Length: 165
Length: 283
Image (cartoon, rainbow over all chains, first blue to last red; front, side, top):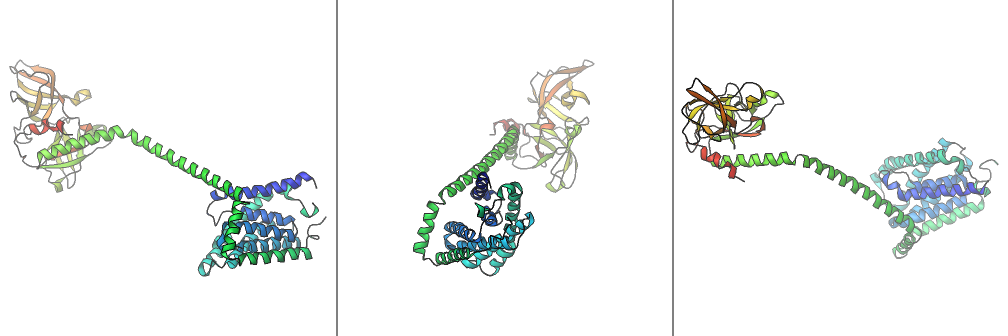
């Protein structure tokens, strides 16, 4: 593996983080726009081992919790779970395929929203149903589309096995 | 190397995962006095550049929206400005009409001219008042500047007005000082002459100076006395040495009228001259 490829991988992840704080606000409502930060985490977990994925997920979730202190810790827990399970399941079950990766992004986003909703305990009853059956699937879909687009455009640079680095 | 085989969760991975879960649970159970300062510190350190980026993006977005709004307002203002002279003119006409209505005090019906996009619309036109408003055939139709025409037919809510430019229009007229009487009729039936009037039947020995105001005489009982018709601009012709015909520039052009007043009853005063003479003084 070339050293430049490793840098490109991190540049793409950083670009996703920048997109999260720049253009995401212009891509529709907060509940339907793609979650670029989670997408960066999921792309990272595709190539990383479950342990580091859980750690990065925890950090990402903790930073997000700092922006929503009312449910502090819920995001950290949710992202930890999603990061670990994504990395583990990708290694065990999933093949290298664009559609499969898209499904992983969709499921990861939906599970993250489910975990945050349950762990925070702020959303209950009908609102929880709406969140999980309407808004979360839409956001999961937009995130999955964005993820597939990123993999399609930069897949060559993302095909880096971090475990070898 | 095949993907996956070396990426199953090892004991170390599991420990890291469990540690993160425990930390998350601990974070969730933090009291507010610890949780809030921790969140604030994260926002002011690690997240600060990202939040600044987000703030700048929002500012840029708001600026773009404001720019669009300003451009839209400017375009609207420019569009409105194109209609300004017309609106000012209409405003002045309506003010004059209101002033005339006040002076008439009763016996009139205000109406809007329903212009049609046809070349002959100035000869006869419809107005938005009819039998329901008390309009009767042969009622005088006036504007603040003078006579426009007479009502020829009346419907329930509209009426048809024959303007002075119509070939069949006739009105008994007189000079402003009452020294000369005659019949006013359109000067021609085609071409530019259609927009001029002529005073017919003036005795040969009677001279009417250019600039003399011609008013309705009230003879015949159709049109009230004293409504301005126009101003003499010259001699149009002589007939056999015993009659003169004078050319008159009309006081009102039918195509320029948007609102009129239809005189429906006996006016307060017998001679309406003074009402129209003061119409120009109305603000």
